[in-house]
Length: 219
Length: 329
Image 1 (cartoon, rainbow over the protein chains, first blue to last red):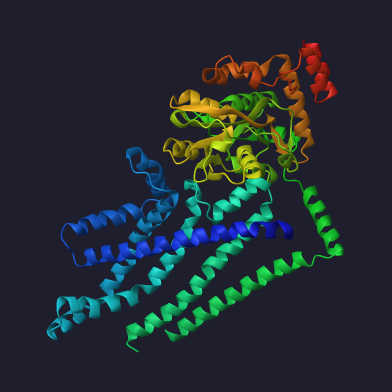
Image 2: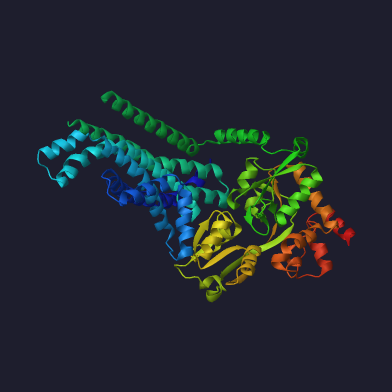
C-alpha cells in the first residue's frame, strides 16, 4: 500500500463522498415523503389513488435501481424529457426508496390497534386530530426500524450511479483504477469512505430506535 | 426489550472499535514503514509474484480452453451480434489464435477500465479489447506486437462542430469512457475540460445521442465509425495526441504465451492476415480508404510519412520481425 498514492487520492474521494451523501440524502427525503403519502393513501383506502399506489409500489420494488435509472436517464430524453444526471440520481433513489418506505409506514399504520381509533372517536376527537395525534405518532414509532434499514439500504444503492456518469464513491474508485492502476489503494479508500458514511447512520439509528421504542411504551 | 437494546449498542460499539483498529492499523503500518519492513514487504511481493496468477502456454493447451477478454459493445471491433455471437476485428483475430492453439475460446466481456485488472487477477489469459499500448499500462501488463494503429479523435454534432478543444466552453461537458486513453489524455493535458464519464460504450453513446455532452472523445477509429453510422455528427478533430498502437496483452511475466502470440502475429503477417481481417470486419464501416492507415501487419508499424525503404529500416520492433517482413516482400 503506497501512502503517497492514498494521500493524493483523498481529495477526489472527499468530493465523491459529498456528492454521494448529497444525492443519497436528497433521495432519502424524497423517499420518506413519497412513502408516507403512499402509505396514507393505501391505509385509508382512498379511492382511485390507492390503486395507483399499489401499482407504484409493486413496480418499483420489483425492478432494480439500475433499470430505473436507465429508464429515467436514457429513456426519458427519447420522449423529450432531459434531466441532469444528479437529478436523475435522487429522483431514481427517491422513487425506489418511496416504495420501500411506503411498506415500512404501512406496517406502522397497521400496527396501531383498532381500539385506539374507536377510543379516540368515542372521546370526540375529530378525524384530523385522530390522525395527527393518535395514529401517526404511534405508526411512525413502529416503523422506525424499517425506515432506518431502508435508509442504509438506499445509501448503499448509490453505488450503481456510475451507470449514469455520476462520480460517486464507487465510480471514483473504478475510474482511478482505470487511470492509474493502483487497485489496492483505490479499493482501500473506497471501503473507508463507505464506512465513514454509513457507520454514523447506524449508530445514530440505534439511538433513534431506542427513543422511538420508549415512545410506543408511553414512557 | 431493554436487554435487546443493550446488545445492539454493544454490537455497534464493537463494530466501531473494530473499524477504528482496522483503519489505524493499516494507516500507521504504511506510515511508519521502516527500511527493514520495506524490504520484508518487497520480499513478500516477490513471493506473491512467484505464485503466479496467469496460466502458461502449456497449461492453456492442456486445459483445452483459453479465456480472452474482448469488448461486447464496441462495434465493429468487439461486439455481440444479433445471434449472440462475438464479432469484430479483435474477435476475428481472437478466433484465429484459438484455432491455431487448438483450444476452445471463452470470450469474457470486459469494460475499458477493468482490462488491466482482468489480467492482473488472471481472470483472462489474453486481452484483445482494442487495448492501446501506453507506458503506464505496460508497467502492469505485457503487450505483444501491435496489430492496429490508433490516435484519439473527437466527434460532435454537425450543427455545432468542435474543431479545436479550445472551443469547448467552461460549462460544456465532454463525454469519455472511464479507463480509456482519451480520458487519460484529457485529464492530463486539459484538466479544465469537464468530463462526463461513463463505464460502457453503450451508455456513453446513448447519452451522447441524448445531447448531454457537446462532444465525445475516444479512439479515432471509434468516433469515425460513429460519425459514419450517425449522419448528424462529424469528426471535428480526427487526430489528437500521439499516434499509438493497439496490441494484445497478457499478464505481466507470462512470457510463454507472449512469445507464442508474437510469433503468431509475425507468421500471420506473411499471409496478410490483418488485411483479411480488415476486409471481413471493418470495411463495411470504414471503406477501403482507412485500410492502410489502420492495419498493422506482422507486428511491424509502418511510418506513413516515410518511404517504404526507410520505414523498413527504422521500425522493426525486433530483428526477427524485420527479416520476416523483408522475406515476405
